[in-house]
Amino acid sequence: MYGTSWYHSHYSSQYANGLLGPMIIYGPNEEEYDVDIGPLLLSDWYHASEQAVVSQILAPSDHPIEIPSDNTGINGKFNCLLDTGSCVFNENLAKFQFEAGKTHRLRLVNAGALDTLSFSIDSHEMKIIANDFVPVEPYVTDQVTLGIGQRTDILVTANATAGAYWIRVTAICGSSNQPKGLGVIYYDNFANASTTSIIPSDSSPTTKRKRNPPKPPAPKAPKAPKASKAPQTPKGPKTAKAPACDNDPLELTVPKYAMSPPEPDTVIEMDLGIKQNSTEQWNWQINGVNFRGDYNDPILLLSAAGNNSYPWDPQWNVYDLGPDKTFRIVTYNKSPVVHPMHFHGHNFYVLARGRGKWDGNIVRPSNPQRRDVEQVSPGEYIVVQNVNYNPGVWPWHCHIAWHLSAGMNLNFIVQPDQIPNLGVPSIMYQQCRDWAAYTNTTVVLQIDSGF
Image 1 (cartoon, rainbow, N blue to C red):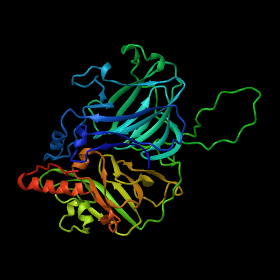
Image 2 (image 1 turned 90 degrees about the vertical axis):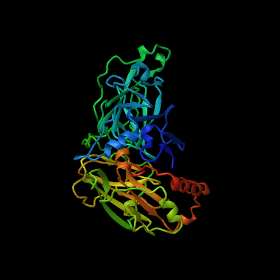
Image 3 (image 1 turned 45 degrees about the horizontal axis):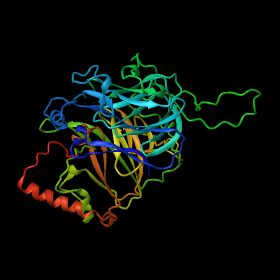
């Protein structure tokens, strides 16, 4: 497994304070390119601390509370145009140099807390080559949609007129006081220009959303009497637009290395929802359960000791998969907002996505899309399947930080008979002993699910 990812804290919503960073696992290059620009961490941002935001979201209320983000940006640099915070516009733009005529790889990561983001570059098309850790057959688009936790690798050829062009990162689902993030790419002959001269003069978008599927290679044509220009990346017929929050249609995202899922040992249906509890807090739930962790009883260590049943702790929301080699999840979003659903430790197959009741049809059963985060919009379902090759206790959760804080998580015990053989590092047990000693004399204020 290789590609673009990110590391981040999973203690409460701590990563929303900035405890995160990019991570690249290098492997074979399936597509040729000249320059690796590296990771672009796209994110929303809150001026308030995550503790303050969580406290507001989980405050008693007669309606669910959503706190809009304050800004949207790239690699920690944000658009000052509408933000009341103190920053300098030109100095607060992420800038990237392109070399004319060369192809550049950009590694996009949505590392935010709330908002689904779209990404585009004025006057440039993008070739998508990977989603999360999975290389895909290349296809051309001028907009990439990223739910929180999702990654997309793109290739961009610097074939426009030499100059400077806006990168646009826009919050399209969620809520933001400043949804329009900006960055700049500039061509190499602008490299020594002043900061002001590499800012594009026009801030209005130049692209409209389109997606074009990969096209099979055409048979070789006979030699023409006159030389012709090299062909551009193939574009297929127009496709129907997906809902704004959704990722590209499953028909477009074809893994480069074909894998077909086996028949599942277990099929689990689950509903995503929100419900007010007896203290008037609004909690996000999976199958009617609002997760709340116990730092003093880590489920992995309990399982390593042979304990895989927790009847007195239903709030842990644990599913023991026993000897199952593969299982399928049919997830229905019965809530009013989108959820980027993430499974730790695995790439899963994305078999279907749609509205209403799943009819059993699978998109391209010989080689479905694979990734580790998939968006499910309000009123929609997604069907994913996992092959249990990685024993452990693995969370399945919404990657919106505030939804996870409010309980939208469950835990799958995968291959429980193998967990005692994992060899959990002794430092982890020592850390738990130290934590137990600390909590014997100190009351820990756990204001959310803890995860």
